[in-house]
Image 1 (cartoon, one colour):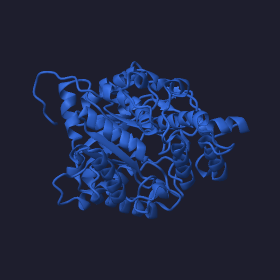
Image 2 (cartoon, helix red, strand yellow):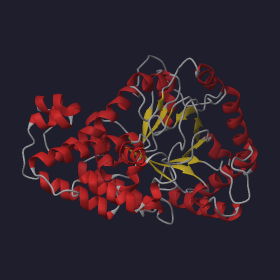
Image 3 (cartoon, helix red, strand yellow):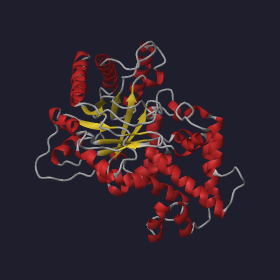
Image 4 (spheres, one colour):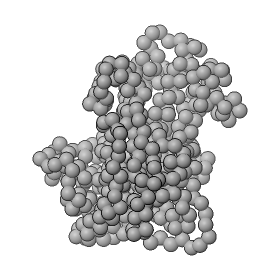
Length: 434
């Protein structure tokens, strides 16, 4: 297992375009596409699980951290990806899954979670204790947040005390809670340079007070809001001029890069500018499952031509039935008329349909779709009609016109943008980790 994130700091000193995408997903096809992409580009791959997805209780995936590691490594072995180039991270590690409980109870469970992540060999740990628990305000004072983060770092340090590769840490939480923004977006307040510097300083003091100065020396990232976000039907694009002051503050904290969450749906130019400006860890998740859903729905339309299903038995129809029957993952997030809700359930940028793909009914629906297409040659003309983005590559012979390969290609189109944005631009001169 690689702990290669610190090389990111080194590369930032030798070139302005050093970055790494952080793949936030538990979907096996997305993970396979990511590892196949990393193998073809000879790149390290960072895959992260959130506190809600994966924890000691199983999260909504049913996987513990050790189970998630086995899951990802199993896919890596299947595609021939070198485990030594795989980096596993934990995102938003803190009391969020249990914030309905009193703070001490929630923090005890958060401590058990980060202990499990650390013992499972996750080498990048994002400490997020910013949310209030039962009886507390929604947002906590910086000193309380930092003190609780240091408490979790101490647990992780104890869990990895004999490790030759102790974890690195990411601090700061100026982003929406796991799962994304809940409301319509029209404007975002960027993190100020002063706030970023204060986040670092208050955490430094808290780590010293907790006796884990060594852990703080391995803190390499600060989560900030550079002015990027997406909602159900809108995307706020990165504007470098607005973030110039924040970007410039990195000169005063050479130990760190910035971590940018919710970079999904940004243009290639915007992603490249983010990396250039020091937002070197780019989190992406919903865009990848959104792209996969586009491919699946395109294949569903193709199957209706090649091997029609009975009314109500197509993939989109069956997913609609499932989401109406079990509304827990979208009902409090989507608002509007019945028609607007239907569109959001399937096509929202926030992609809350992704929570349904592990459901047995969804897996059965996808399997049925693939069986309908099995043995059929998908004509280029139907690719052009329903998966137009894939037509040039299919017509050239670069992508086989098969259902699995078209799903992989859909995800890798997005990964290509991140790979291009995060490419290191070599420059002469020594590289020194601060």
